[in-house]
Image 1: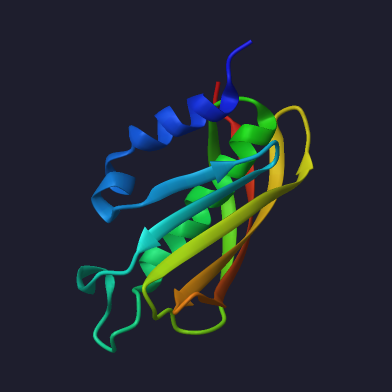
Image 2 (image 1 turned 135 degrees about the vertical axis):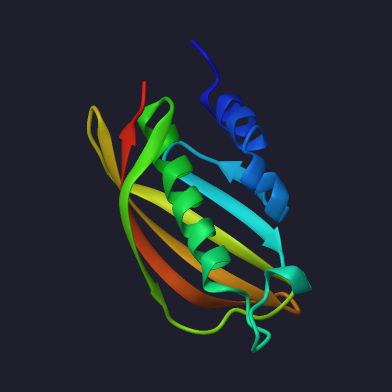
Length: 135
Protein backbone atom coordinates (compact mmCIF):
# COMPACT_ATOMS: atom_id res chain seq x y z
CA UNK A 1 0.00 0.00 0.00
CA UNK A 2 1.49 3.38 -1.00
CA UNK A 3 2.31 6.00 1.62
CA UNK A 4 -0.25 8.71 0.81
CA UNK A 5 1.68 11.34 2.75
CA UNK A 6 4.86 10.83 0.70
CA UNK A 7 2.76 10.87 -2.45
CA UNK A 8 1.19 14.17 -1.34
CA UNK A 9 4.64 15.67 -0.76
CA UNK A 10 5.84 14.50 -4.20
CA UNK A 11 2.76 15.97 -5.87
CA UNK A 12 3.19 19.26 -4.01
CA UNK A 13 6.87 19.52 -4.93
CA UNK A 14 5.96 18.89 -8.60
CA UNK A 15 3.63 21.94 -8.70
CA UNK A 16 5.45 24.74 -10.53
CA UNK A 17 3.11 27.44 -9.20
CA UNK A 18 3.62 26.37 -5.58
CA UNK A 19 7.38 26.43 -6.10
CA UNK A 20 7.13 29.86 -7.78
CA UNK A 21 5.36 31.25 -4.71
CA UNK A 22 7.81 29.57 -2.33
CA UNK A 23 5.07 27.53 -0.62
CA UNK A 24 5.89 24.54 1.58
CA UNK A 25 3.69 21.58 2.46
CA UNK A 26 4.42 21.51 6.19
CA UNK A 27 2.36 18.48 7.16
CA UNK A 28 -0.44 16.13 6.26
CA UNK A 29 -2.57 13.92 8.47
CA UNK A 30 -5.31 11.41 7.72
CA UNK A 31 -7.77 14.24 6.89
CA UNK A 32 -5.67 17.41 7.07
CA UNK A 33 -2.95 19.48 5.49
CA UNK A 34 -0.90 22.52 6.44
CA UNK A 35 0.84 24.80 3.94
CA UNK A 36 3.15 27.73 4.73
CA UNK A 37 4.37 30.61 2.62
CA UNK A 38 6.82 33.34 3.61
CA UNK A 39 5.56 36.85 2.92
CA UNK A 40 7.80 38.69 0.49
CA UNK A 41 7.30 42.06 -1.19
CA UNK A 42 6.44 40.48 -4.54
CA UNK A 43 3.38 38.80 -2.94
CA UNK A 44 1.88 42.13 -1.79
CA UNK A 45 -0.61 44.48 -3.37
CA UNK A 46 -0.41 48.28 -3.49
CA UNK A 47 -1.44 48.80 0.17
CA UNK A 48 1.26 46.47 1.49
CA UNK A 49 -1.09 43.58 2.28
CA UNK A 50 -0.59 40.09 0.86
CA UNK A 51 -2.54 39.91 -2.39
CA UNK A 52 -5.88 38.13 -2.07
CA UNK A 53 -4.85 35.77 -4.86
CA UNK A 54 -2.02 34.42 -2.70
CA UNK A 55 -4.38 33.92 0.25
CA UNK A 56 -6.84 32.24 -2.10
CA UNK A 57 -4.11 29.96 -3.49
CA UNK A 58 -3.33 28.80 0.06
CA UNK A 59 -6.98 28.07 0.79
CA UNK A 60 -7.47 26.18 -2.48
CA UNK A 61 -4.31 24.10 -2.25
CA UNK A 62 -4.70 23.28 1.45
CA UNK A 63 -8.30 22.19 0.87
CA UNK A 64 -7.24 20.04 -2.08
CA UNK A 65 -4.42 18.34 -0.18
CA UNK A 66 -6.58 17.68 2.90
CA UNK A 67 -9.28 16.21 0.67
CA UNK A 68 -6.82 14.28 -1.46
CA UNK A 69 -5.16 12.64 1.54
CA UNK A 70 -8.57 11.82 3.04
CA UNK A 71 -9.71 10.31 -0.27
CA UNK A 72 -6.45 8.39 -0.63
CA UNK A 73 -5.36 9.63 -4.05
CA UNK A 74 -5.01 12.40 -6.58
CA UNK A 75 -7.67 15.07 -6.20
CA UNK A 76 -8.94 18.32 -7.66
CA UNK A 77 -10.96 21.15 -6.18
CA UNK A 78 -14.40 21.19 -7.79
CA UNK A 79 -15.47 24.37 -5.96
CA UNK A 80 -14.61 26.57 -3.01
CA UNK A 81 -15.68 29.76 -1.31
CA UNK A 82 -13.47 32.13 0.63
CA UNK A 83 -14.18 34.88 3.13
CA UNK A 84 -11.41 37.39 3.74
CA UNK A 85 -11.74 38.54 7.34
CA UNK A 86 -8.65 40.77 7.77
CA UNK A 87 -5.76 41.98 5.60
CA UNK A 88 -2.80 39.62 5.67
CA UNK A 89 0.42 41.14 7.01
CA UNK A 90 3.36 39.67 8.89
CA UNK A 91 6.25 37.35 8.18
CA UNK A 92 4.41 34.31 6.84
CA UNK A 93 1.04 32.73 6.17
CA UNK A 94 -0.19 29.35 7.35
CA UNK A 95 -3.14 27.50 5.83
CA UNK A 96 -4.66 24.66 7.84
CA UNK A 97 -7.30 22.55 6.14
CA UNK A 98 -9.34 19.58 7.23
CA UNK A 99 -11.69 17.21 5.45
CA UNK A 100 -15.00 17.45 7.32
CA UNK A 101 -16.98 14.87 5.33
CA UNK A 102 -15.41 12.16 3.17
CA UNK A 103 -17.24 9.90 0.74
CA UNK A 104 -16.00 7.52 -1.94
CA UNK A 105 -15.37 10.20 -4.58
CA UNK A 106 -15.55 13.55 -2.85
CA UNK A 107 -14.67 15.34 0.37
CA UNK A 108 -16.02 18.57 1.81
CA UNK A 109 -13.20 20.51 3.43
CA UNK A 110 -12.60 23.73 5.33
CA UNK A 111 -9.49 25.86 5.71
CA UNK A 112 -8.34 28.70 7.89
CA UNK A 113 -5.54 30.97 6.73
CA UNK A 114 -3.48 32.78 9.35
CA UNK A 115 -1.04 35.67 9.03
CA UNK A 116 1.81 35.34 11.53
CA UNK A 117 3.77 38.22 13.04
CA UNK A 118 6.15 37.77 16.01
CA UNK A 119 4.76 34.28 16.60
CA UNK A 120 1.17 35.54 16.89
CA UNK A 121 -1.35 34.02 14.47
CA UNK A 122 -4.24 36.16 13.26
CA UNK A 123 -6.89 34.64 11.07
CA UNK A 124 -7.18 36.42 7.74
CA UNK A 125 -9.44 34.09 5.73
CA UNK A 126 -11.82 31.15 6.06
CA UNK A 127 -12.69 28.87 3.15
CA UNK A 128 -14.81 25.84 2.40
CA UNK A 129 -14.69 23.63 -0.65
CA UNK A 130 -15.39 20.31 -2.31
CA UNK A 131 -12.59 18.07 -3.52
CA UNK A 132 -13.07 15.17 -5.95
CA UNK A 133 -10.85 12.21 -6.77
CA UNK A 134 -9.13 12.66 -10.12
CA UNK A 135 -8.00 9.10 -10.74
